Length: 239
Image (cartoon, rainbow, N blue to C red):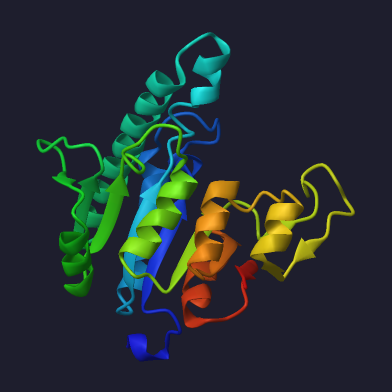
């Protein structure tokens, strides 16, 4: 069935808030189930999906750094937070009948496989959803950069950043009524305008490797499914 889809292998970047209750803090199992259903609809069509998830619902390193915490310590805590989110999402997917594997950039063999690129690709080829936790395994890099890096490593066709906003705007649409949404953007425009697509390291990595990015609303009706079919959903950032 995947023949009708433009993108056969996708790296999906999720923020930790995708799993959070309305307060934005913590993990809501019911919310994880809703995310799992969205992913299942795409995986069931034969599209290969790898997922990188953030940890903003559990820990924001900036908070610790502002109180004098070392950046390295704050980042390590964030990496562990992404693993907690990944386990919650894996559980929701598997309870919904989706074969899933979790790999982590920091070894913790009791709860997940270590990240090995060839093994991750093999899981994808076998139709399993692969969740990639603990960021890049290095401090001072965001999960945006982890998403970009993993997209290159697994030879994804596209990086999809799923948020709660339906694309990229020239200003915050929550506070600016006149905010303009972009249907398409070049990497350079996104970097020069300092638009909130992804951080500059992730954007530069995608630009250097010609990896297209789509930013969309995860909760829009069939938005993820439409995006992998190649329909214009959200904002496309490319060369």
